[in-house]
Image (cartoon, rainbow, N blue to C red):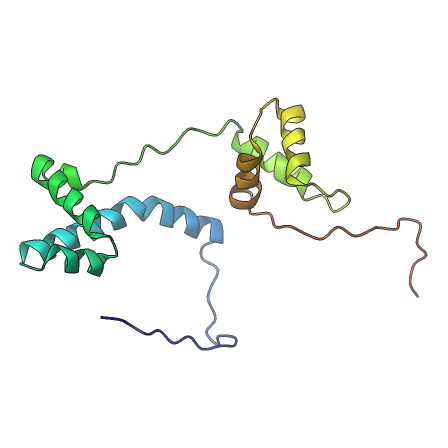
Length: 162
């Protein structure tokens, strides 16, 4: 079963109020991730208990057949606890939120152009933390949401336009 979604080009004429910032929306989505994944697992389990073949139930919730078998095994061994997603949350950041805000402010300076390598050296020098090139890229692009920009010369002594 395939669905076709049609999106219309152009600007939407519906105004959206600014009750939530994008950061708040992203935080809410992050908080609900475990519940959504549990819901998906319960839908899969319900389908299989109703007699739907595992491969069809797996396709319906967007997983592969092997994952479906694993979920059933975990459910059989541990009940509902076996279906609960187990996220460790990962290692805490070496940089505090305040340090990340300070780093973003430094990197946003229009007079400077920072490459990932230059940012890596800045973090090591300023915050005494050593990150790999890949991790600095993740921090700059994903955590701080900074994009690449093309450097261009800024002429400070240029005469003003009339």
